[in-house]
Image (cartoon, rainbow, N blue to C red; front, top):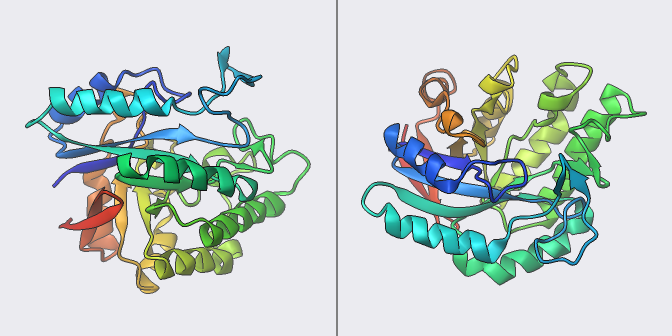
Length: 279
């Protein structure tokens, strides 16, 4: 089984790739299941049908996925590619403490459409990590701890997610460089315990190769800790916004999970429920 459970298309504000291009590349690579996880980031982005005003980013309105068009397009893709690949319907929910209510309402509206949801924190207090607005005026200790505090609060108080996405995402954008895992080990452990107690999982995000990080994402140390705490739910996602990144470095990722970290299984999701597969 080969499954990529973190992929974007031009339904996300930061991708210009048509769904068809992502799907055809996945089929070419022998991917069995592909889950689209388009962006939702309340607090900094408005919904597609909001009268605005919208923030402008890269010359375009900064807004969430157009949900009706997105699910209709996926229904058409499922019909068109039936028998060639299994397509799943997901969202990447960028949640902050003050947007939990909006995300709860969104999930209730579309729960019947969703197979999978990623929980991400992309901003704190509506301040972005990229460009590094949130880091300005803070020390490296302060903004790294601030990120994990926000993630812990959201993981505790928000329930409508399957896995935690790119758990140590700050490593992608930290202007001061890599930050020692040990400094935030205790709060990371609490985040992982919270997810495990709720029956949630984490993802291995293979964009770490693209970002040229010094380790996989999350770090091997975080994945070992998750395993040691009893965590079992694990997805693998490329975070691909372009076709050449679909299922990127999946061979290396699976080998690390199996041969170095002692994982034996990974998950796919349908209707928000996991199915386990051998690595």
